[in-house]
Length: 148
Image 1 (cartoon, rainbow, N blue to C red):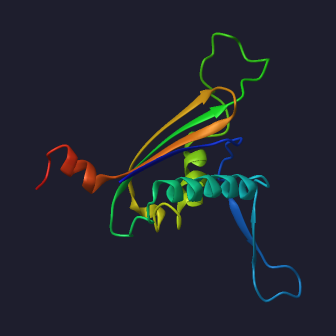
Image 2: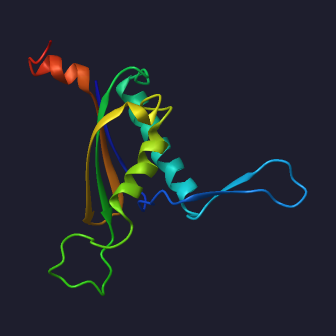
C-alpha cells in the first residue's frame, strides 16, 4: 500500500512543549512554543484524510512498519543570496518531520512509532508545501522479491 499527497501550507516545526499548572488549578495545561503548529497539523491531517478516502485506503494497522518521505518547500526570502538553493536556517528538518509524523498519526497509520524509515528534504520553492508519501514496507519487500 502506498499513499501520496501534497499539502499546501507553510511547513511548521514541532516546538517544545511545557506543562503549566495555573494558580488554583489541579491539572496542568500543555502549551507549545509554536502557535501556528496546531493549524499546520490540521491542514496536513485534512489533506491525508482526503488522500486516504480518494485512494479507498484504510488506516495502516499498528504492527505494520512504514516508510515516510517528505519534501518541505519554503519560500526563499529576498535577502537570501541567489546561489543558496536550500534553506540552511530554521526551521530544523527534524522538527518539521516530527510535526508531520504527529499530524498523520491516527489517519494514515495508527502510531508514529510505525515509521521505521524516513527520508526528508528541506528546499526553497513556491507555493510553500509539503509533499508526503507513506509506503507499507512489508508490501514493498514482496514487490521487490525480498521475502523471507
